[in-house]
Amino acid sequence: MKSMPVKEKLDQRDAILNYLKAIERNLAWLSRKVDEPYNTMYSIFVQRTFDLGEERLAAINKVLGTSF
Image (cartoon, rainbow, N blue to C red):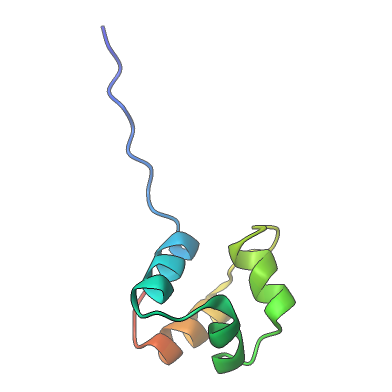
């Protein structure tokens, strides 16, 4: 019996990066808007060494007008 391919849930970080690309903004812009150091944002979104966290996610949603 063949196993069905499992569809991975899109990570919130990927969804946010895709949204930034769609609105032609980059991580540095988001970093300034949420008043979070760029190095921290890079570690969250690119290196994935830090968790996004609810507080940061709320701040990002507020700036972007989204609900990730």
